[in-house]
Length: 172
Ligand code: GDP
Image (cartoon, rainbow, N blue to C red; front, side, top):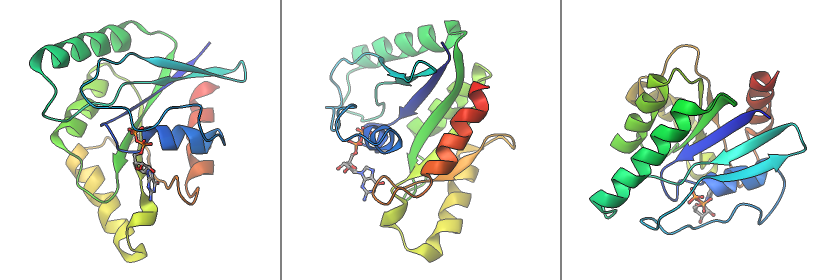
């Protein structure tokens, strides 16, 4: 069964993204505490694919030991999964991607994975800032030409259809 992974720093809005896509309020838990040891969570989507919720990263408070543990788990998952079709990297459209976001993007590219970047919390910026912020996300991540960037809001649902389109394209 094919897999689509979702990655993003803690509190970026990853759970809200999943919940909006699947029209549920509470399947994916929100507000997970950073620094707590977490594992990959798998959500089965109508027999046709799995959403793989990668634990949130970032937050300087996390101890070195925790970071190493996280890195090892990521490495294991991303280097061995033949079912993995594409990774959705969730970033906050209001800010330039963080160092951790850039590291994650590079890490995924290192494994030759297609990445779809979802710039969420679109409802929190003014309409006139959208194009400029999207350009910043592309520039700071150093996004490859073939990787798609989707503006999204879990609040309004904007970008939901485009996100599903991206997922379906990689499942065929
Ligand atoms: P996670 O830790 O990445 O899973 O983040 P959550 O999904 O728990 O979201 C973190 C916070 O951001 C919560 O308070 C959400 O309500 C809020 N949030 C997430 N997505 C959006 C969005 O698109 N728009 C707005 N306005 N708030 C959002």
